[in-house]
Amino acid sequence: MDTIMDTIVAISTPAGTAHRGIVRLSGDEAINIASKLFKPDSAKSLKKTGNFTAIRGLLNIPQIDSVPALLFLYRAPTSYTREDVVELHTFGSPALLQSILSIFISLGARLAHPGEFTRRAFTAGRIDLARAESVAQLISAHNLSEMRTASLALSGGLSKKIEEVSHTIRDCLALLESAIDFSDQDIDYIPRHQVALQLKEAAKNLHSLLTKSPPAASGVRVAICGAPNVGKSSLFNCLVGRKRALTSPIPGTTRDTVSETIKIDGAEFLLLDCAGNADSALPIDQLAAIQMRNYVGNADIALFVTDSSKRPAGSERIFFNQISCKKIFVRNKIDLPQSASFSAPQKALTVKTSCVTKKGISELKSALISLIKSGEVDRSHSAIAATARQRETVQNALKSVKKAQDSLSEGESEEFIALDLREALSRLSEITGESVTESVLNAIFAKFCIGK
Image (cartoon, rainbow, N blue to C red; front, top):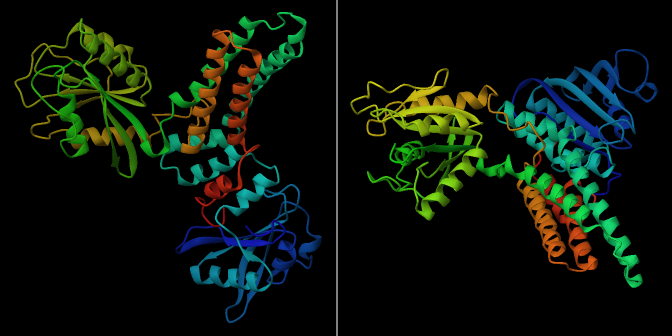
């Protein structure tokens, strides 16, 4: 990485022709370099122009002549990077923007690395690492739900949650270290029940950062659920486009959850083919039912599948009403003679399908993408660890807290418990960037666009 004192420049708008293009400068020489190319309509020089100012003027570009432009000036330390920042807004011609970029580089600026503007904001303390990562998430968001998730992190939702958990763990450490200080006086100084309660709360809060957010590459969680032998696995295979799950006319074929990632109109969905919700005395069926309910409980969307050739059992209706996430009532097996007593729940979003004729499959896909694009499936209602790096770090911190809980319940010494809690704090500081290696930073910001 080049020195932070360099003045950097980049085109900040996407490649291709557009109504407007933006070239951004940041650094000590940003105003000086821009003033050599940009001439304000007024006689006032850029160096004497106030902060947060928009100025109209012309760009004097050799072989092109004068080009109208609008310049935005943000002075240090109140800018995004806490350096002097200049943005030139002009026509979005790729050739014009490249010419401006080349001139600025010839005047002493350096081409910015991917994400370097945001990295400077992080290094200068303008934003923490969780907020920095949310910038890239916001840029790459495919729908309203993803935008809300990124916006929540950008406004500090995730960082605040991490700080709350860290504060709880630090309180526990203070109690433990006090006990260590008095260990030679044969005094039972530490109220272990109090530490146990605080660690339970910390573990719960860390777990909440994971349960409502699948890994970034997995997309929107869609749990396919319902009674046994209603065609859940067949529907799963139809959506996937191949025979991914085992199907059989014998009820209870699926006992473990099968998953597959698909794309619909550019949006990613993680399909989960769950075991049937059957009443059974067999331990394996009971475990499968528990697992299925856990998956449905953490899903973004539930496809509740029924056999429309039969009357739904009372237990099916009860289970359907218990599902709290957004749900679609799937009337499957419409190729068979239909039950006269079949009825869908009132006001339920209903789609009719046949896995034999493939009728209704495209309508079901349309219903899924409609829920996402309309913003009805909102995964941003609470702070979450959204990136793979954040999730892994939270999981490691949670493991350390659970180790501390085990040590506490087993009567281990305060030194051992404190060791695990210090490890948990170290992990959490990696999310906000208080403790993170240069290689991790390089990997994070390499995923950004140039100019961001």
